Image (cartoon, rainbow, N blue to C red; front, side):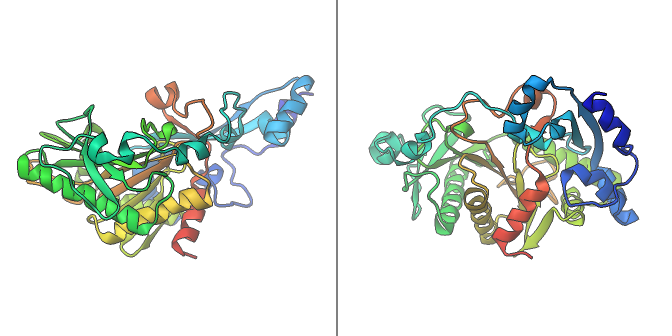
Length: 381
């Protein structure tokens, strides 16, 4: 009898509840079934969950290799895959923890990251002479200075250059200053062009996150007419949700995650381990507006990535309503930081492929694990 046939004889049907449920993505559907009726209804407004079993029957000659990578043959013979779809924003994720343990053959040397973090002499090490300035000059913070991006995404596209070369060496004061300086840059842009009122902040750390210069820096843009497509998409989705259900999407999104133990609030900041992440460990930080508490929360979340979960390469994005008057309705849209792990920098294989670009995001990290680590980092029991 094959291993698949043996498994089929012993496993319970997917529709039968498991006798014990641990907080984890593989048991998400059963966790939802145990919520109160109102919480279930709220969850199903926003998310759809389905699951399946992927089977395979490896030859004996592969068993040693499989055990070396995955621990046992049994765990690969029948793999539980969970598909989560956000019905409001149409984001989707496919979870299989074995994806995080799959063999990676295209690897660089392990000392590349340490060398890159300490190698100085790039243009950002001397920004006054090595980078152009904006038409209104430079904005200077305590720990950073701005420059104009030499190859622009948009009419106003700047750089927040950190005084610290090492992109992973940052503390709370530094992170707060980077965000505050970025906003001061935005104010200078608005003074020049009030219609360029849609602000975007992004931080790409190391080459896996698309940083072309490794010296610590973030980028800022201001655009006109409409916010960038993904941010405008979230706004429209939230407006449609409110028109349909009479409640605020972002409040319900937080509560759905809190009902499952995937979200908590501290100092007015909501921290969410997102059920449809764009990639590994995606965390959302939300507050009614961009407060100092939200800036500090970004530091704590990034420190959790770096110090607790070993993340070296990450992306950060800030979603904000427009900074000036616009015709569309942004009511109820909070300030949101999105941060995501971009994988091991010494792995030359990209973490985003055709599935992520054209179908759904394939995820190997359990959001319940991410939430557990975030709770510890924020001092939440």
